[in-house]
Image (cartoon, rainbow, N blue to C red; front, top):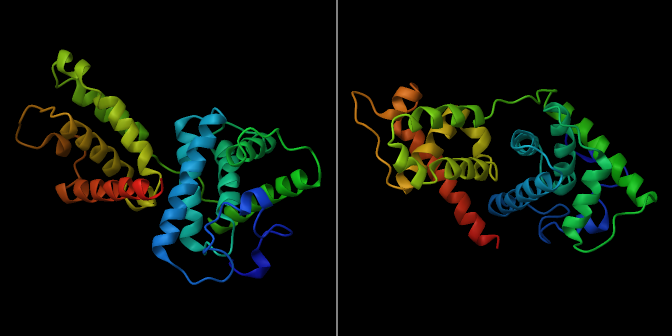
Length: 259
């Protein structure tokens, strides 16, 4: 589906305030650079999360928007489509998928404010309507590219279940003194900055974020015949957990480079 015929009509690079946010070396027909692309995807996912918060979206719809974005660019080149325009369409589509409908106008205005702090909302002029049409057309493009498979299983429900199970094994005073739950949720959210959220199973991501949170605060669980994480997730191995944590630490390294 890639190529000139599948570009968004009239706005291949998005409006000037949007297109200007692309890395200067990533436009046109530049050769693929995995490191640069990874950094761009990280920045765009941060945009999705911050915009989602400003739109009042719940955590699962925002996570769905990130997965839609990563799935889309799993199949197409970043040089064919404006990443931030795709991100806006992913937010729009995710709201529908997760039954938290967000108006396209609100997404456009919040995105405009994101890139132009202090500016007034866009007027309903030709630029606004052209951008709105591009968001809607890009939504259809994403649906076609993903063969309408836009409903995903997220780790959130597993994190909640695992937290409740682990909490029952820990002294309640020790649990209240350490922000294990808050840290687990924060780590889970950070997983969506990269494509690790689509490369690992939801259960493995959930168990790894909890494992890292517990280890970070030195919280020890009772020792039994099996490790606690094997009891909660039978198919998880230590290698699976280490792989998730390794990918997450690479994202934190990316965060430092993107400041």
